[in-house]
Image (cartoon, rainbow, N blue to C red; front, side, top):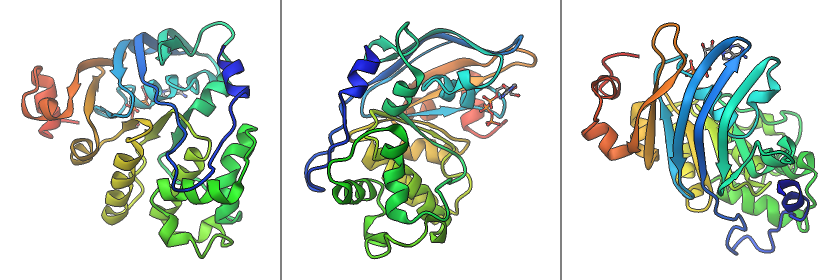
Length: 278
Ligand SMILES: Nc1ncnc2c1ncn2[C@@H]1O[C@H](COP(=O)(O)OP(=O)(O)OP(=O)(O)O)[C@@H](O)[C@H]1O
């Protein structure tokens, strides 16, 4: 079903000023557990990540946030010996259902990583177009798609006259926004971001945060962050992960960001968001 939908889809960007063509899709997990070999690292995670909102995954190092993020677009299964149980629902359909293909899912659910990873020698324009090219999606109007994607990523005004320069010539923050543009060029319904600002200075970080808020008007965003101020600034809802010693990670508490930070229900959440551990 997913594959049929995917092959019928092409990236369309008729005009940079027309609305983004992404369909609005929410994500949810039901009892997701994950293992690396014999070792269970996530235990029955059930979360709702509504369409066009930003969900922040917070918690101390090693509690399974990145692993959980990677289960959301089937990247977890790329690790030899990795296993998964439970359901990941994209618009109500399990992305692990029989007949659903991982490559097709990863086009609908894009990912931005901790370290900006543009192709350094490739020019800015081709870096953006590499998204749909690698995904095997036809592009009707490349120039329009480049402008639209860079605009959506908040980078167009800075690079409009430099499209033939290499991606590696940009600053770290610009490179990360270029990577966001490359992901958006595939017209994903969901964008997963794994600590996208951890390698960036405060100014670039704030710029990316603005971009995330803008993207979330049309794309569902899930972000892993260690920065509590960032979680408060960018997210609509939060999920607090915690792993006791030799135990898999579990969600202690999840809910609207404001409530998580002002009136947390669990004392462990209160201690974590106040910076008392982790
Ligand atoms: N490829 C892997 N093979 C084996 N174990 C792994 C692998 N990746 C992660 N783990 C283990 O799974 C657990 C969860 O790791 P994960 O990276 O998801 O945590 P995290 O909360 O994202 O941590 P951090 O905040 O430090 O990035 C850790 O104990 C980690 O050692």
